[in-house]
Image (cartoon, rainbow, N blue to C red; front, side):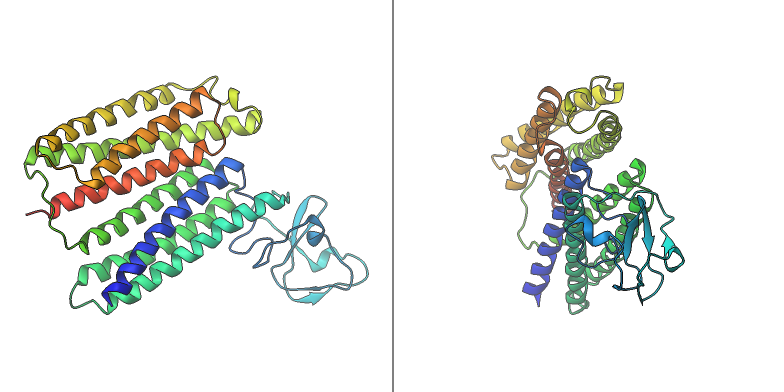
Length: 338
């Protein structure tokens, strides 16, 4: 059972990271409203592939919840019925949560894949919780945390619904991202608990403080990054996807502070590197942290100086998420050390 538990744990963590990556691609491509309803997509379990599928059809069987586009607005079938020879408005209800009624097949399928990954992540965490029940006597805390992860996945799904219903309000997207990082933290903690190896890290109080400071600085950096991302999203909508050179032409002070703040994150981890180098032991997870900090800075440079090359935005977010996970794991292993 331990092997299954470990498998579901690692699968859950990988899938949560894939959801974060997919969400970033959705945001980068402007595909967030590719499916204007939730949890289905235009009322279908498998979304349409062409605009004609959303036109009203005569003598056609419609199921409750299916969506059509009429005069640039969404109409929803309130019940199962077969349409007549002419369109009758009384057979349809207006979709009132928002007024977005554009079908773009690329956006639709990008958003659908994002939701599909979310569903798979939810299934994986459910299996993780079930497998943890068989280990309840041995590790009750793991079962409790696995249950909290299930609740968190449900809350995350609800947040996804509110994001769509709000027509992608930026602050709701930020909350959605914050919840994803919390799920990463819980899964990383479980991953550290099943690691039977004995860490040989510096045990001094000052070293632990500096590791905690590094993690805190990363969280602050990610928080500022979400605010900068909101500004970039506004500029993206203002200038369009083809005018990336203008997105940061009038960047706020927060952007420059966020950019310079990365040097502080790097400096703190440079100090930690020196402390570890003195012990002649550099844990692979810490080397991963340094590597991710470098990639994070490099992707930021590419976005600013090379006008947001393709995939630079999602990569920047993925690197930040991986960095947070690696730092959290390192901190937890340090605390575990006796």
